Length: 471
Image (cartoon, rainbow, N blue to C red):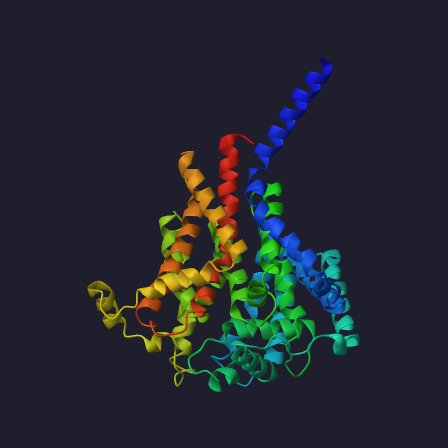
């Protein structure tokens, strides 16, 4: 009888654990695929550049303690938003000085911005020496380690495909200034927004006078994303699950790792900045400063510019204080002044300059001059990566499960889902109409612009399902 009772209790426990961890079981094929690939490619793990890894970790801790310090001084919600504020402040101050003079170098702006932060912190009178000391020690360790081991890093690796012009942007920005690089653009009308931050990462980590791409300066994005995921307002077990899936997807795919953490492509840094800011806005209604920084993403590429205005509209409809929306337009005001003064001779946007918007609208309405086959080809290319495709279906499954269980879709989830759907269809429309004769690899990159939003959506949906099932 005791044996039967123990067996029954054991079965109940197994059933409960299985039910509680249903999302892990759902993703089991993706996890198993990663471990099989890890075993089969163990030689590549053995050949890992450990000094690059250690530099990356030191760089991450520098950002972590800096973000923690800023968070506590300014009473912010997360460490990640503190890091993003710090990064974007360099561009904002740089753009502000251009109204006065165009002779300030990137390195001088780096010093001016850090001095500005120091003065603001002193004014706030919330200076906590022990928190600042953690940041300073990690930063000092990073710089010393990088100086001593500079020749042990892989220098200027992974510069392939479109990275050639990103590299030129970074080189011109760091060695001269943002203003100089814009006026000597190797790709007329193309944004240099993401290159600005890759230059900044190099300046923080190495501080050399000549720009060289070193992987630790972008590999740090992997750990910054994991930090962001672990600051989401969801259960700890779901955070761990999302972190695991992100790790598996990115490290298991040469394409995704190249795109997000192992090159100077724009997708990695833009995913991070956009996702952190949008999530903060959706969860902190009175965060006026976040709106200002979010609005400055207007200097990035066109795909994000459209989404910024759409999201400002979403925030109004979400009962966000309307008087704050003007803060989100400060970046637009800066841009308009810039392209009517010191950037007046430059092409404003490479992509928009190629489009006859009125003619394109009539093409879509009348179904003329369209290559609808591109729609299928883009989807085929998107779903080529099987683990990523499986992840998309898991996310879609959680959306459908919310509908099945009659769970009222979270307002934040609605906005995030809208961003994903709008971005996807805008890109599809572009490639079946205006860019119908273009190569069809790039649209996958543009769709993946919002890769991190998928994880936020998945986390919110799992949380809602667990609440409904009382897990």
